[in-house]
Amino acid sequence: MFNGSGYGDDIEPSPSKSRKKGSPDADDDNRNDSCQIMVDNSDNILRVLRKLYVEKAMCDVYLKVGNKDYGAHRIILCASSDVFQSLSRVCINYMCKHVPHAASHNQLFSWLQYSTYSTSCLHSKVFETCQNYIKWNFESVANTPDFSNFDVDMFIKILQQNDIVVHNEMVLYNCVVRWLELQKIKMYQIRTSNSEVEEEYKLLVERIMKYIRFPMMTPRELADLLLSPLIKQHKEFFVDRMAIGMKYHSGYTDQIQSDYNTEEGKLLFTPRLYTSDSCSAVLTIDNFWSIPTYHTSTFVFSSHLSAAEHESHKVNEWLVDLYPRGVWFRKCFLIVWQGTLEVPQEILSTVRLSLTCRELSETAMRVKVSVLIYGFQGGVEHVMEVREKIHHFAAHDKVMNIDDLIPFNELNTPATQQTEHDTPYLVGPNRDQLKLNLVIAPIR
Picture 1 (cartoon, rainbow, N blue to C red):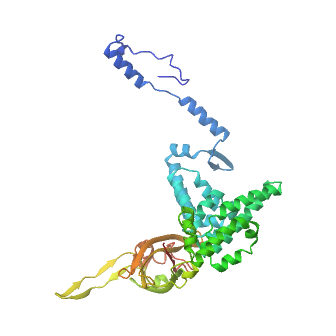
Picture 2: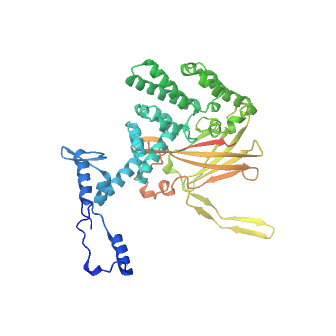
Picture 3: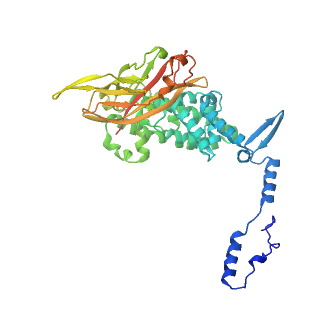
């Protein structure tokens, strides 16, 4: 066996394996010997690890004992101790459940950045939870001091997403302007030349604003934007993009057809999860614990089938039936030509949302139905989950069901446990309100 220095001078052949040179047995033994050679580099590895510990190089965790901090490495702790390995999982679960708390204490983007550079599947769960919180609660996040710490590349990645929840695209634009202004302040803090700052800021504006979907703004909003300082300063960049928006609203689709045919262009004409009255409705059930089993709450609302101004007359009416405490189909009798057929009762332990198209503006239409589910975590009410489903409504298919909208047991505990049950799916001052937001968007 090689020694720790890597040299093999002290290897001695085993007498039991002495063979004549050139014999088949000797050749086999030579092959076996080469397969059994091992390198013992443990001393060197220990020296390297000791150096990392002493110099606190790449320490990613600190243990506080009394008033003293000890730097360490998570991978070593986890490999050496089942306790620390379990603590890593506990910490990850804690972070996932307390992302709203982190956001309210200006730690959201540090958590996001922390989880970005880890290849661990556990850390990817933290990353996904943080990213979803940002997308689904974008307006509230944009109003925190921590918003300025949003990394440029990650900000762009978020802006490319279709499931950002905002009131409308104009609100998103104003949030982006605020982020840009915060970045400009940072630039002046590290740059001495005003010309350098202006050039860097110009490039940043163009890099970010290309992901704003101007066709999703109304013609009035586009006209008002022409007076904004940012648009005036970068007129050459914005004019063409805003012109595409005006042509879209005027119905000049042939003039912007080339924009539809690119991946980036398709995003321009794809609505996000807008919560404005034109395409969404808030569904709430108050005094939740007092409603009976198999209760049905019914809502009626209308939505536009297109964001384009020239198609504003296309409006559909919808009927929503919400079953938060299970679905009960009572026993009934069906009269057919052979006689009377008994249909037995059926009970489904599911939280169901049933959407019915009351009137079709067109013979058929394909829409994306998104349900924003509000929750209460870390002392913060927020959009906790988003469920999406694409459905093709037609004269023969006017109903779409979404089952298991919320885990059934979360909303249907035994009566003796209701006062103690702490479900995150109820909001309001008394934590007894079920709140959803239904968003309907047409798909080209």
